[in-house]
Length: 137
Image (tube, one colour):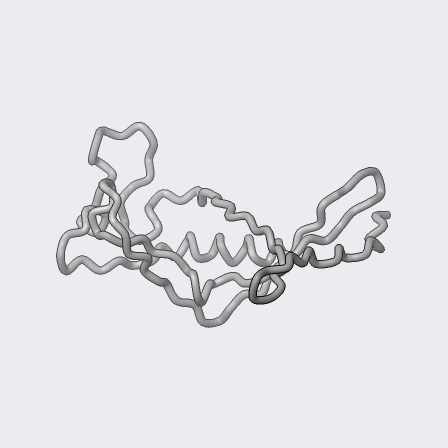
């Protein structure tokens, strides 16, 4: 049986010119969903296809093309959240992050910055034989 009685670490406080700052370290982790279509278009995700074969009008940023979310990807995100004991939000929204990249014809990237489908969860990290720690994610 794992011993989960470790105390939470004390916050790291750094004195600033106008007040104290709490040091918070976060990680951004990307995962690939094994789907046969892209997240916002019906274009194939098949590896090794001819150049530009897996591009739809949405991917190319054509005017008037509206993205439709891939339902399978949403299902997989919810399953992942449940596995991480995360909060599954009943309302979520996609946000645009506007900036220029040469390979981003729409001029924006879509994210779930403010209202994500999956919220905070946790994962158990084994620190050694019989010792583990729950880490918030």
